[in-house]
Picture (cartoon, rainbow, N blue to C red):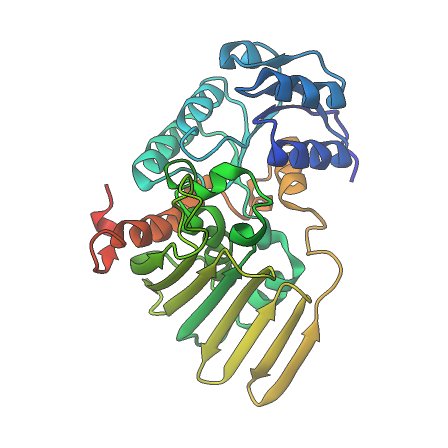
Length: 336
């Protein structure tokens, strides 16, 4: 879709996700006018690709240019300052996941966004995937009792990722860095129920010689949502093949959505389901396109993951993370 107006977009964070968003912005028909990164060479490289001279390590310099939106792809501990500065200028935001490192920071960010009343989307792209849109439609009128999700990836086998992903102080570990996507997707397909409590068991028993990394490779999580559904999540970031899976169980259904082959399998009300899902979602837009179109039109309903809802997924993650140190279920209402 081409923009009627050539939107001017800034990008904070010139790493892999910054480059991804640059492509998505330009594919939509908008332009990148400024790039910020703590590494000046990285900012300059992406700025050169975008054909702009505004490359900087200073946020004040970055924001000293007119822009219609800003993409924030910083590591999770670096969220509040750029969000606060964008809010002060009334600039719409696309914020990569997780929305913040923990709920204490998430609430600070949300307070700024709510006061400024700006468009603020979070980069949960699975909400725009036609596979999960279809699963959401199939179960819309059904009773659900259980949900199971799986995330597997090869980080501890190949180390083909930004190294900070495996440093808990920066990434928060696999729950906020990886599991957050598929757990948010589970909430999405069920109509965004809120978390009640969560518990996680986690260990690092791979790559023991790599002492610079402390993120766990194996996690099992259990949780409760306020729609009465109990959930489990299995996460492993040291296995050969990537997978995102969502399985829904109720009295008359068991449906399993496999992202790797874009298929929903199982049964629903006595009928066998084996349905490949291809094509676009109903919007015809991905997460970045939906955000940009919302800026153009003012239609915030295009955004399937507003910051205000994304912090509910963050609460689920934060409760599980905090439970690792207590050995008990952590209720969301206890989170700092």
